[in-house]
Length: 359
Ligand SMILES: Cc1ncc(COP(=O)(O)O)c(C=O)c1O
Image 1 (cartoon, protein in one colour):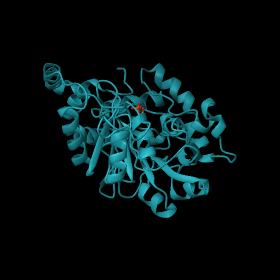
Image 2 (cartoon, helix red, strand yellow):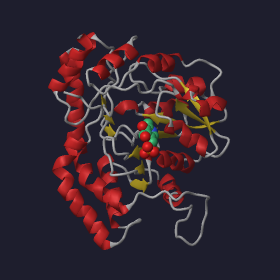
Image 3 (cartoon, protein in one colour):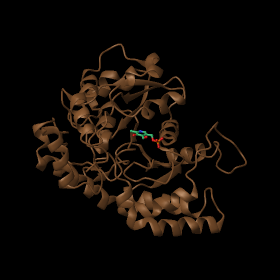
Image 4 (cartoon, protein in one colour):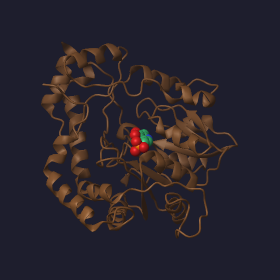
């Protein structure tokens, strides 16, 4: 049987009728932008992560750009980012005129640490964007404490994770989420959000998503048209209450890989004290990752090379390429492989993946 990289369909099936009803209600109501669904979703998301504020925006990339600006970063400022992440993390910084400065990551967690951030810090550094890569929380609070820099947590892949009892998204000064359909909490289109306890960041972010205006009369900033829409908010309100059970399913899937003996074929992702990962992707490493990828794909297992080219080696980021090497990032980029995982991933599927590797 084919094993899909993501299974977004099966977990959604029990909620499809309810979603259709809620979307129909939005259509009947005729209020499509910044209405009651977005307001209610923002309150429910804030309650879920334990934030004072949640601000719905158009996607996870805008969430980052807006959060970075709201945290006080201005064009020309340096912002430290990992190179081992999805392209949008650095793109969001560059798009607002700031300079992404690439730092190396820790092998086990695949995330920035205080030490790697400090190695990249200069007097021009204004902030750090940590990424909770593949659903493993980064040590954002420690990075903030040891560098004194504001931290924006890119939790696009990590809703449902926690560290030391705090939810992903709330580990720095502001956190951002993506509701891209294949994410742990996926909309039926694009969507994103910013969460924060900081009143000032929230106020600016709320204005930036609406053309830099608080009242539609006076325009204080050159902002964005970046709103979560009512239809997506209605979908997300049905699915948000499922996130803990879905992430439990993802964690059971990761355990199924361990029990099935995946460790005989790959170096498995490391753990972190106090962390409960959300396993958006399960990404082990092996020297012959590409040979394993070919073998898995031939057996119908949809593995994929995430992220084979790190950001500091991407053409558009050439102007920001660091003078020094990022050895752990390069090592991971060469060897990691994303394997199938989902809220409904089974031990039988894990056995199938391991059997394909052993064949
Ligand atoms: C780590 C990370 N940051 C940012 C984003 C951007 O989110 P979006 O696609 O909603 O703009 C994504 C996902 O696409 C991501 O995985």
